[in-house]
Amino acid sequence: MTVLHTVRLAPVGGPMPSAGASGPLFEVRVHSPAGLWHGLLTGRPGPGRSGGAPALPFVDEHLALDLAGPDAARWRRHADVLHLGPTTLGDGPVPARLAAVLRAHPGCAVATADGRAGTLHVLSRTGGRLVLRPRPGSGGPPLAAQRLAVGSLAHAWLASGRALSGITGLAAPAHAGHSTPGGPGVCRGWCRAAR
Image (cartoon, rainbow, N blue to C red; front, side, top):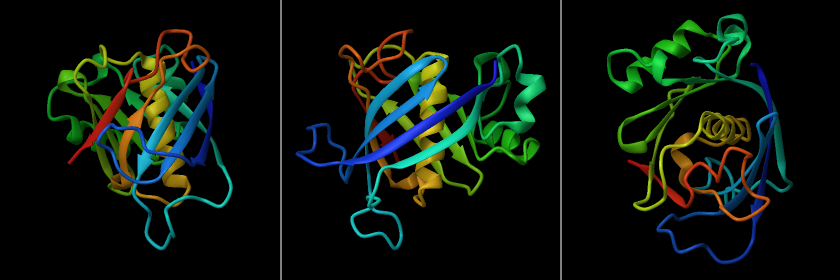
């Protein structure tokens, strides 16, 4: 199934959650046929930006696709974000597999894949890398729609002029109205970017 994602990034004022992540706080909303994914992202200012926050909320629309999905062969060359499902990971290290996906799909800007111990790897066409590690006790691995949502927020972050290395943390509130129909947000708590 092809999925059009609309992502809204908006700066948020107020105190930082006590999660060990640092930087400006952004609200993230990813709208897709799978539902609404809502979360908070912390990040460092991008090059040439004062405080790292846009003056107005930023909206990005793009096509996201799980390569393990039934329509993957038909739509993958059009996708801006691709997720490697467990059946497509194959042998070899995750970063090398992501780089191969980006080489094979010149129109794709962001590729994501599951790693060991619940990690989620993100690689951008510009070479930026991000590995999100769930905090202890934050729950099991994310669902496919949630993994695509993380790829979509990475796409929006890049489209707003920032680098993946600027993302320092991600949280998905698990209270009513802030989760996908399949369950709570991707981390059910804070994820920290691994360095």
